[in-house]
Length: 171
Image (tube, rainbow, N blue to C red; front, side, top):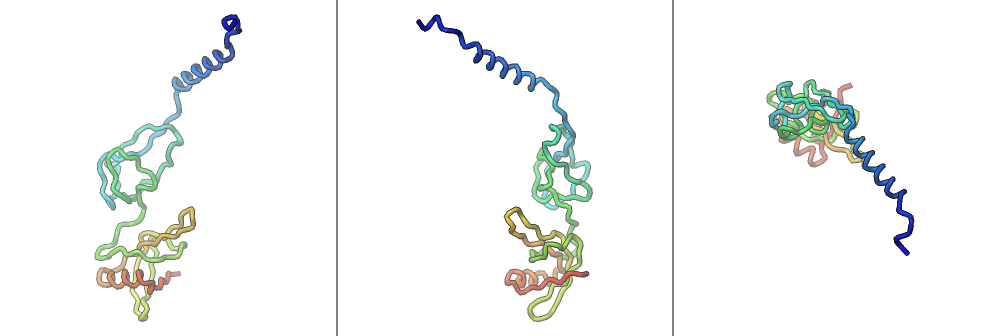
């Protein structure tokens, strides 16, 4: 007779324990910390000011706090998006009358360093690094950005694309 068997007390106890633990977890106060969010839409390259930031409480340790001094938007940021490290840039704005050209840079070159770009025919032009080359977790190196005078930007871009450009770093 099946109805005379022992009831599954152990299963009932386990299910009740899971429900009590879930309720306790949900009712507990978790630690929160303020984190910056975009208060308005930000265009790529737009400097981020304190008026553009809205501070919201999020669970502590969820996101890494970025440094916000002297930053600009690395991409278009919509209002309400968190200002994480990948969305902001600390590179300085382009100097007047210059163009940013992607160039193969050594990994040790940093922002603001002066470089001399030498063409295959021996002529050279000065430049300033505004975004250094980076290496990802797979070992792939991205090009850096160098600010060059507008008069030679086309020549630098063509030489860089053809691999005919040598970058000299100032010691």
